[in-house]
Amino acid sequence: MSLMTDDVINFTSMLRMSYDFLHSGRKFNIKSNRKGKKLISVVFPFSDLVFAAKAIPIFPIRLEKFKVNTYLEALNSASGLFGWKAVSNFLGFIRKFDFLKVFDGIIDDVINSLNYKYNKMYDLGIEEGVSNDFCYGIKALYGMHSSRHNNLDANLNVIIRCSAFNKYYESLKRFSDKLIWLDIPPRNIGNALEICTENVKETISQLEKLTGNSITDNDLRKQFRISNECRELYREIIYEISNSDFYPCNPATFSEILALLSISFQDFNSNAETYLKNFRNLVKEMKERIRKKIGMDVSNRPRILLTPRFGGWEPESHNLIYKMGGRLLYADWEILGALENVEVNTYSDPAENYAKYLMDITTKGVGCDNNALTDSYIRVARKMDVDGLIFIELFGCHSISNCYTILRQKVRNELEIPTTALTFNKIGENIEQVKTRLGAFMEMFN
Ligand code: SF4
Image (cartoon, rainbow, N blue to C red; front, side, top):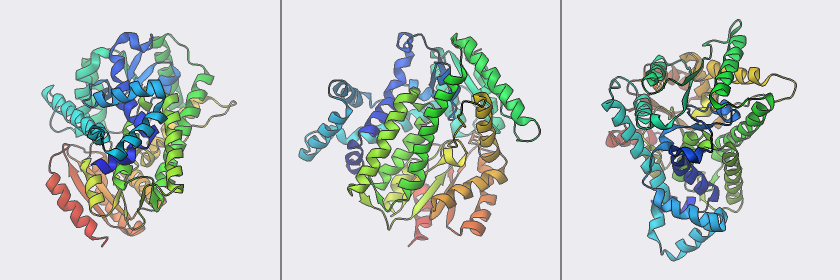
């Protein structure tokens, strides 16, 4: 897939993000690399309070060793000497002469080794006794904790609507007695906001106790400003750049970038400031390439939104859609409401503002009922102006995956675009079936 690698090699910020994603987590297995900071596992993009506590949030798969590290390690060493921009220019120069075929595999390796590791964690989850009835995401997360719990100082458990997910949180007691809970009331009625604000404050005190650091209002505001800018840049990619008739790269690469952003967004690669810097550079580079017409004309390709991706999906889908003449987009965090800004001003209580942000997610996305959730799918699909929608029905999911019947009806009535559902159990399983379903779906655009 050298076309995709060619595309990404010129994105310095993408190289850096990929490196940080795959490598920077693993170094935290060694205590001395944490510089006295506590390492706290997070799932879903809820790492703000951990950053504010001057601890290190980590999506636990990033503690694993990835096969691709040798290449990126070499690049990182070179970047230490010459800077990432110079490394990227150098790679671009080398490719013209086609000396080093080894670079062909870099980005593919990032995604492939991640998928391979996800499946490994899934297998480990099953070996460790997670019932086969649970979804892919839960099995893989359990496997991640089983593999790396010794390296973690605590887990931040943000309660969501899915009861299976909350059982998974409970099961972490097997590995750790340091579970920090943040409960979000399921409905925004009565004094729910007040309760949620108290819960945020309680979580803050638990983090303070664990880390020995006090979290001031200014610490919270500073972190929210960083996250808000990341969220704005993310929305800019989803709504503006993805809607462009000219892409800064091959559309399959674009999908890979969206997938990587979505996964890395959970812990900001454990360093919020660097993540923001890379995000800014990524958007800037994308816009520059579009302006200079470096990339690909995609005006004749239908834009397809695939969701939900976060609980497990077949990554081959975006290559298949690309080969079938379309472009596949991922926007889970926007659909689930996690890309809204947290209000930041000096006269209001930041804990309450964060509680409002969490409550908003509860009412619109991850914590809400199927009716509100399907409204969110429709809202985002309409705003993105997509031409089709693919819904992932996860084996073992009795919550989010249950809403396809309602969703299909709403898509028919309100958007009048083609829609289909794909079932998913494990990465790499049933590729032929996925291919057939997607082929039939894409026929509707011919
Ligand atoms: S909502 Fe479904 S996919 Fe998400 S964690 Fe729960 S069971 Fe898994």
